[in-house]
Image (cartoon, rainbow, N blue to C red; front, side, top):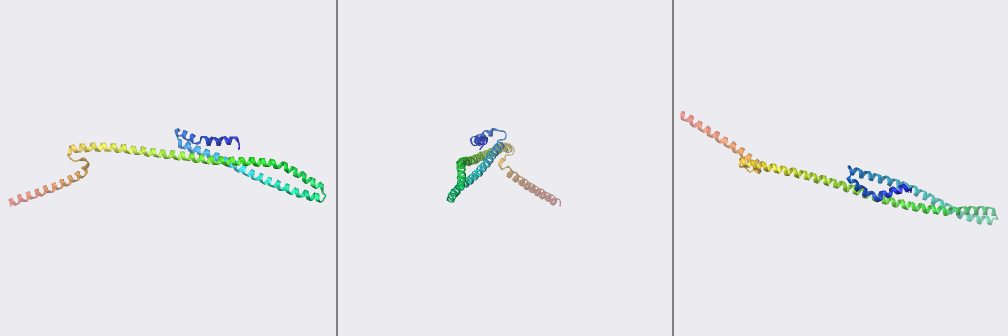
Length: 222
Protein backbone atom coordinates (compact mmCIF):
# COMPACT_ATOMS: atom_id res chain seq x y z
CA UNK A 1 0.00 0.00 0.00
CA UNK A 2 1.25 3.48 -0.90
CA UNK A 3 2.63 5.58 1.94
CA UNK A 4 0.13 8.38 1.19
CA UNK A 5 -2.80 5.99 1.67
CA UNK A 6 -1.21 4.62 4.85
CA UNK A 7 -0.91 8.17 6.11
CA UNK A 8 -4.57 8.87 5.40
CA UNK A 9 -5.62 5.65 7.11
CA UNK A 10 -3.53 6.56 10.16
CA UNK A 11 -5.04 10.04 10.25
CA UNK A 12 -8.59 8.66 10.22
CA UNK A 13 -7.84 6.02 12.85
CA UNK A 14 -5.91 8.32 15.17
CA UNK A 15 -7.90 11.52 14.91
CA UNK A 16 -11.39 10.70 13.71
CA UNK A 17 -13.40 11.14 16.89
CA UNK A 18 -11.28 13.96 18.31
CA UNK A 19 -11.62 15.81 15.04
CA UNK A 20 -15.39 15.37 15.20
CA UNK A 21 -15.56 16.63 18.76
CA UNK A 22 -13.48 19.65 17.80
CA UNK A 23 -15.96 20.41 15.02
CA UNK A 24 -18.78 20.77 17.53
CA UNK A 25 -17.64 24.37 17.94
CA UNK A 26 -18.08 24.99 14.19
CA UNK A 27 -20.98 26.99 12.80
CA UNK A 28 -22.52 23.85 11.31
CA UNK A 29 -21.05 20.97 13.34
CA UNK A 30 -23.46 18.30 12.09
CA UNK A 31 -22.59 18.99 8.45
CA UNK A 32 -18.87 19.00 9.32
CA UNK A 33 -19.15 15.64 11.09
CA UNK A 34 -21.12 14.12 8.21
CA UNK A 35 -18.40 15.33 5.83
CA UNK A 36 -15.72 13.70 8.02
CA UNK A 37 -17.61 10.39 7.85
CA UNK A 38 -17.85 10.69 4.07
CA UNK A 39 -14.09 11.23 3.93
CA UNK A 40 -13.59 8.11 6.05
CA UNK A 41 -15.82 6.24 3.60
CA UNK A 42 -13.56 7.40 0.77
CA UNK A 43 -10.47 6.05 2.51
CA UNK A 44 -12.27 2.76 3.22
CA UNK A 45 -13.11 2.47 -0.47
CA UNK A 46 -9.48 3.04 -1.49
CA UNK A 47 -8.20 0.49 1.02
CA UNK A 48 -10.73 -2.08 -0.18
CA UNK A 49 -9.69 -1.45 -3.78
CA UNK A 50 -6.04 -1.92 -2.81
CA UNK A 51 -6.97 -5.08 -0.91
CA UNK A 52 -8.72 -6.46 -3.99
CA UNK A 53 -5.67 -5.80 -6.14
CA UNK A 54 -3.30 -7.42 -3.66
CA UNK A 55 -5.57 -10.45 -3.24
CA UNK A 56 -5.77 -10.89 -7.03
CA UNK A 57 -1.98 -10.64 -7.37
CA UNK A 58 -1.45 -13.16 -4.58
CA UNK A 59 -3.87 -15.56 -6.27
CA UNK A 60 -1.97 -15.24 -9.56
CA UNK A 61 1.37 -15.73 -7.79
CA UNK A 62 0.03 -18.85 -6.06
CA UNK A 63 -1.08 -20.25 -9.40
CA UNK A 64 2.33 -19.56 -10.94
CA UNK A 65 4.10 -21.11 -7.95
CA UNK A 66 2.00 -24.25 -8.20
CA UNK A 67 2.58 -24.41 -11.97
CA UNK A 68 6.35 -24.17 -11.59
CA UNK A 69 6.37 -26.89 -8.94
CA UNK A 70 4.36 -29.20 -11.20
CA UNK A 71 6.72 -28.47 -14.09
CA UNK A 72 9.71 -29.27 -11.88
CA UNK A 73 8.20 -32.64 -10.96
CA UNK A 74 7.31 -33.40 -14.58
CA UNK A 75 10.86 -32.57 -15.69
CA UNK A 76 12.28 -35.01 -13.14
CA UNK A 77 10.26 -37.81 -14.71
CA UNK A 78 11.24 -36.65 -18.18
CA UNK A 79 14.94 -36.63 -17.24
CA UNK A 80 14.67 -40.20 -16.00
CA UNK A 81 12.96 -41.26 -19.22
CA UNK A 82 15.54 -39.45 -21.40
CA UNK A 83 18.44 -41.11 -19.60
CA UNK A 84 16.75 -44.48 -19.88
CA UNK A 85 16.51 -43.90 -23.62
CA UNK A 86 20.15 -42.78 -23.77
CA UNK A 87 19.05 -39.29 -24.77
CA UNK A 88 21.42 -37.28 -22.63
CA UNK A 89 20.80 -34.20 -24.79
CA UNK A 90 17.15 -34.24 -23.83
CA UNK A 91 18.02 -34.90 -20.22
CA UNK A 92 20.44 -31.98 -20.25
CA UNK A 93 17.73 -29.63 -21.62
CA UNK A 94 15.29 -30.78 -18.93
CA UNK A 95 17.91 -30.26 -16.20
CA UNK A 96 18.56 -26.75 -17.56
CA UNK A 97 14.87 -25.99 -17.32
CA UNK A 98 14.75 -27.36 -13.78
CA UNK A 99 17.55 -25.03 -12.75
CA UNK A 100 15.66 -22.04 -14.20
CA UNK A 101 12.54 -23.06 -12.28
CA UNK A 102 14.51 -23.46 -9.06
CA UNK A 103 15.79 -19.90 -9.50
CA UNK A 104 12.24 -18.54 -9.91
CA UNK A 105 10.54 -20.39 -7.07
CA UNK A 106 12.30 -18.57 -4.17
CA UNK A 107 11.48 -15.22 -5.77
CA UNK A 108 7.85 -16.23 -6.11
CA UNK A 109 7.78 -17.44 -2.49
CA UNK A 110 9.15 -14.09 -1.33
CA UNK A 111 6.52 -12.31 -3.41
CA UNK A 112 3.81 -14.53 -1.99
CA UNK A 113 4.94 -13.82 1.57
CA UNK A 114 5.01 -10.08 0.87
CA UNK A 115 1.54 -10.15 -0.74
CA UNK A 116 0.16 -12.18 2.16
CA UNK A 117 1.58 -9.62 4.58
CA UNK A 118 0.07 -6.76 2.58
CA UNK A 119 -3.29 -8.55 2.41
CA UNK A 120 -3.34 -9.10 6.15
CA UNK A 121 -2.34 -5.49 6.76
CA UNK A 122 -5.07 -4.18 4.46
CA UNK A 123 -7.65 -6.45 6.06
CA UNK A 124 -6.71 -5.09 9.49
CA UNK A 125 -6.85 -1.52 8.14
CA UNK A 126 -10.31 -2.18 6.70
CA UNK A 127 -11.57 -3.60 9.99
CA UNK A 128 -10.08 -0.67 11.95
CA UNK A 129 -11.53 1.90 9.56
CA UNK A 130 -14.98 0.34 9.72
CA UNK A 131 -14.78 0.32 13.53
CA UNK A 132 -13.71 3.97 13.50
CA UNK A 133 -16.54 4.85 11.14
CA UNK A 134 -19.05 3.23 13.52
CA UNK A 135 -17.53 5.20 16.38
CA UNK A 136 -17.81 8.42 14.39
CA UNK A 137 -21.43 7.62 13.52
CA UNK A 138 -22.16 7.06 17.21
CA UNK A 139 -20.65 10.47 18.02
CA UNK A 140 -22.80 12.05 15.33
CA UNK A 141 -25.91 10.26 16.60
CA UNK A 142 -25.21 11.29 20.20
CA UNK A 143 -24.66 14.86 19.05
CA UNK A 144 -28.00 14.81 17.21
CA UNK A 145 -29.77 13.45 20.30
CA UNK A 146 -28.09 16.11 22.44
CA UNK A 147 -29.24 18.85 20.07
CA UNK A 148 -32.78 17.45 20.06
CA UNK A 149 -32.83 17.25 23.87
CA UNK A 150 -31.52 20.81 24.15
CA UNK A 151 -34.18 22.07 21.73
CA UNK A 152 -36.89 20.19 23.64
CA UNK A 153 -35.67 21.57 26.96
CA UNK A 154 -35.59 25.08 25.51
CA UNK A 155 -39.13 24.63 24.23
CA UNK A 156 -40.28 23.38 27.62
CA UNK A 157 -38.58 26.32 29.30
CA UNK A 158 -40.27 28.63 26.82
CA UNK A 159 -43.64 27.03 27.49
CA UNK A 160 -43.00 27.22 31.20
CA UNK A 161 -42.20 30.92 30.93
CA UNK A 162 -45.37 31.54 28.93
CA UNK A 163 -47.41 29.58 31.46
CA UNK A 164 -45.84 31.55 34.32
CA UNK A 165 -46.58 34.87 32.61
CA UNK A 166 -50.14 33.76 31.82
CA UNK A 167 -50.59 32.66 35.42
CA UNK A 168 -49.42 36.07 36.66
CA UNK A 169 -51.81 37.87 34.32
CA UNK A 170 -54.67 35.59 35.36
CA UNK A 171 -53.91 36.13 39.04
CA UNK A 172 -53.85 39.87 38.55
CA UNK A 173 -57.14 39.79 36.64
CA UNK A 174 -58.79 37.61 39.30
CA UNK A 175 -57.70 39.97 42.05
CA UNK A 176 -59.11 42.99 40.23
CA UNK A 177 -62.30 41.12 39.33
CA UNK A 178 -62.79 39.97 42.93
CA UNK A 179 -62.14 43.43 44.28
CA UNK A 180 -64.65 45.02 41.89
CA UNK A 181 -67.39 42.35 41.92
CA UNK A 182 -66.85 40.41 45.12
CA UNK A 183 -66.75 37.19 43.06
CA UNK A 184 -63.99 34.62 43.14
CA UNK A 185 -61.99 34.95 39.93
CA UNK A 186 -61.41 31.21 39.55
CA UNK A 187 -65.18 30.70 39.48
CA UNK A 188 -65.90 33.77 37.39
CA UNK A 189 -67.24 31.88 34.40
CA UNK A 190 -69.74 29.88 36.49
CA UNK A 191 -70.70 32.95 38.51
CA UNK A 192 -71.25 35.00 35.39
CA UNK A 193 -73.57 32.35 33.96
CA UNK A 194 -75.44 32.15 37.26
CA UNK A 195 -75.74 35.92 37.42
CA UNK A 196 -77.16 36.01 33.89
CA UNK A 197 -79.83 33.43 34.81
CA UNK A 198 -80.72 35.30 38.00
CA UNK A 199 -81.05 38.50 36.02
CA UNK A 200 -83.40 36.75 33.57
CA UNK A 201 -85.46 35.39 36.47
CA UNK A 202 -85.60 38.82 38.08
CA UNK A 203 -86.88 40.29 34.81
CA UNK A 204 -89.61 37.61 34.62
CA UNK A 205 -90.74 38.31 38.20
CA UNK A 206 -90.81 42.05 37.53
CA UNK A 207 -92.84 41.57 34.34
CA UNK A 208 -95.29 39.39 36.28
CA UNK A 209 -95.68 42.06 38.98
CA UNK A 210 -96.28 44.73 36.36
CA UNK A 211 -98.95 42.56 34.72
CA UNK A 212 -100.67 41.98 38.09
CA UNK A 213 -100.62 45.71 38.89
CA UNK A 214 -102.18 46.58 35.57
CA UNK A 215 -104.84 43.93 36.07
CA UNK A 216 -105.70 45.39 39.49
CA UNK A 217 -105.94 48.91 38.09
CA UNK A 218 -108.25 47.77 35.31
CA UNK A 219 -110.43 45.87 37.79
CA UNK A 220 -110.76 48.98 40.03
CA UNK A 221 -111.83 51.09 37.13
CA UNK A 222 -114.53 48.67 36.04
